[in-house]
Amino acid sequence: MKLALLWCTCALALTPAPRSHLPRRLGSSFSDDDLQRPAGHGYTRGPGEDDGFVDIPTVDLLLTQRNEAKRRRDFVVADAIRDELKVEHNVGVHDRDRTWWLGRQQRQARPQRPPLPSDHGYAREIGDNTPLVDEAAVDALLLQRMHAKMTRDFTRADAIRAELSSVHGVRVHDGRKVWRAGVDADTADPWARVEDVYERDSRDGGGAVDDAAVQALLRRRSVARRRRHWQLADDILEQLLDLGVVVNDKTRTYAATVDYVPCAANCKGTMDPHDREHVAELVAERALHKLRRQFGEADAIRDRLLEGWGVRIDDKKHTWWQEVER
Image (cartoon, rainbow, N blue to C red; front, side, top):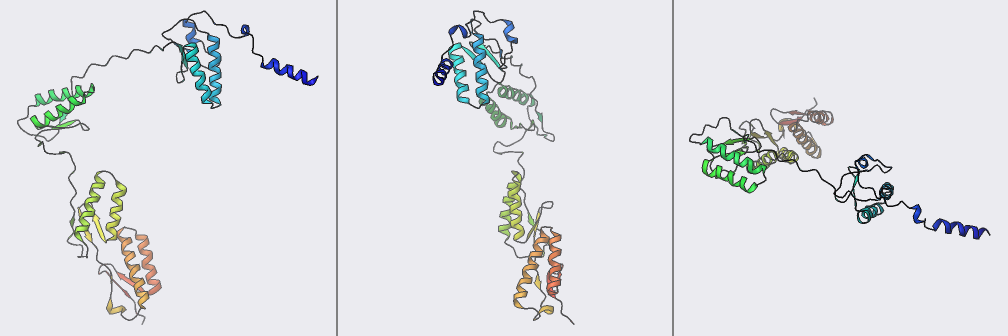
């Protein structure tokens, strides 16, 4: 008996509802009241090209089911409901605006394009006193070029820019909104930054260094700085420091440091060869810290040399020695 009752209950649950219980198809057409008709799904009806018959309760039910599917992240079902709304009911949905409409959505007419300006907005560069320049013709061409760019006729804009250069010798800088006359047509960029040229400081003490290799690194660093590749510029500066080269960007000079050498008069025969080699390495490491202006690390090595081996350093003479106990 229990099994029979259970079977009857399941059969009733699976039996489809009579058509009289389903939302009936309404015969009302689209009205202004529908624009302000919020439902449980949160969508409101917007104007469409078709204001004919639509089964509004069914649309509300499908939109609610679609919202529930999206909350479950079941986007396959949500897309299927969206397609059903479009195919079966001719209803479109816009999720961002939370609106739905019948037929095609009525889009607002595009605003009319504002009139083209009567002023190009460019000024002649300050300090440009090139004679024999027809400024009226230049202004007319600049205005035409501005209009061509605003109407997205870039081919015409490029042709006018070429005409300004070939006929009038005028170059235009769009970023600064200025123009300059008297520029040779073969000049690539009259506003390009002049390449930095570094010279060796004559007061560097005459340290041994390959000047050609140093100049090559300086040119690479100059290009990196001009392109704002700061990390690459810093890496090249580290390479120069490893070579014992100090760069002064203000004076555009570089100096090759002189290696520190032991003072033979005071330390000859007083230090083990292994210790002597290790001390020389520490002295060179201290010099590198000083080049990098890491004075704390340099002072720590100085104190270590003095406490461990009794070694003193003369930075002016670039020498070091071991004090002899008396």
